Amino acid sequence: MPPPLYRCILMDPPWNESGGGRIKRGADRHYPLMKARDMPTAILGSGVWHPAKDAHLYMWVTNNYLPKGLWLMEALGFTYKTNIVWLKSGRAGLGQYFRGRHELLLFGVRGRGKAAEVCTPRRDLTSAVVAERGRHSEKPADSYALIEARSAGPRIEFFARRARPGWDAWGNEAPQADTSTPQE
Image (tube, rainbow, N blue to C red; front, side):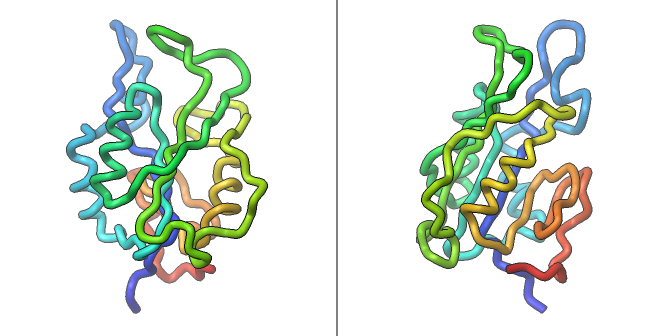
């Protein structure tokens, strides 16, 4: 059976953020990191990179990785359209100039991203998610709900940390994509 062609792709790349100073505070305490220039090779060579001709891509970036996120999106054949902001309720995070309380979820399209097969007809979806922080790198459930409300499946999450019902997953901490999973 041929692999599914994914109309919705989400990724939370392991950006090469290492935290400052002598105390390890960065992502490197939690999982292996990658240089941005190595990501296209890893993603395209994953064996599960099968975007549909018309597809949506969502990509998490921190503020300092915004330019590299836009570069990676283009390198994967998607055109940046807009972003969603996750406003983290509670205390502010780290940052050299401003204490970070938000993260960006870039949104891009490939082909006819507005096609009915890809884009749901919803007109009430906002560009912001307000949610508590979870464990390191854990994204809010509301962000998945927003993605599922906007983008049709089949869906896959790259650099996933756990499996999610209705999604295939690829990454160090999640089961590899199960192409036998029923999709929409």
